[in-house]
Image (cartoon, rainbow, N blue to C red; front, side):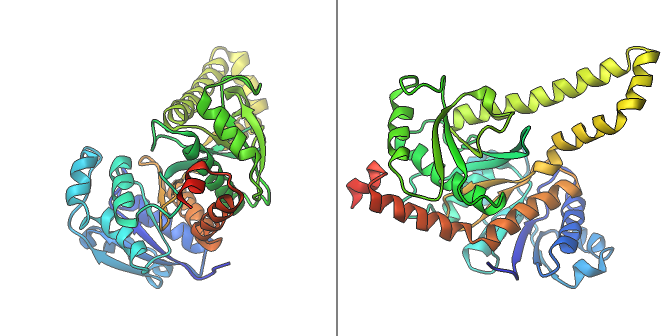
Length: 349
């Protein structure tokens, strides 16, 4: 397990950049004292903020980058002219071996496009996938793909399952995570031919994961599985629905406790429990989506994250780099090929 890590930060991506990134790095420096940071962005804006954190100054280097990709930039435009941006140069640091992982809160489409072009897809992986931790009743689960791939075949879903399992082992510390394919029912006869074929192949694998079959959407918030696998179209809708439901419930609870004097008194009694609920659902505690399947590690933070949230994304990056996630995925894909569990791989051999 790697201990001393170098983390490349795009310091111009968050809504509150670069303050959010510097505050997040300062918190991460406390949690990971052996980490080193490369700070990409406009030096005249970064340096005054960095000077307020002497401990971070000692382990950081500012790389002055004038060009910035905005949230309004179209991904195609960002990919064409974004290599010299703070985002592009942070990814390049991973590609060139100067950093172990890159973290950005910038434009998601641009980050995905630049990462795919600059890092390239791993051998044996047809498409990279976007994965994230989601809060559940049991704690946290992994879900992928969350929007990188709208249309997927069975081979893609098998590869997503393998990458999701490796991610769960690294970030959640699970030796044999449970895996399921999102479907319209748990019965073997339900679903389209794509998910049925993927399930058949996953049942035949002999990798460090436990495939349990199909899962329905109502199992996600209860954390019935460690990893939920689906195409990007389904995953993005499911994720946004979960996030909207969490906000909906929080608003209903708030309205209920403000509805009368007795309700306000009831809030005083229940306040500790309500605060624990809000903390569990706080997106800053579950921040950090990962581009899996590339020849390098890239983490996407929410653009609206605060310093605590950005530090959480850095923590996800540290966990992946420490456990050498890229090498884990490569080893599992090789094992899948040897067992013939992937149709595309077997034909290629």
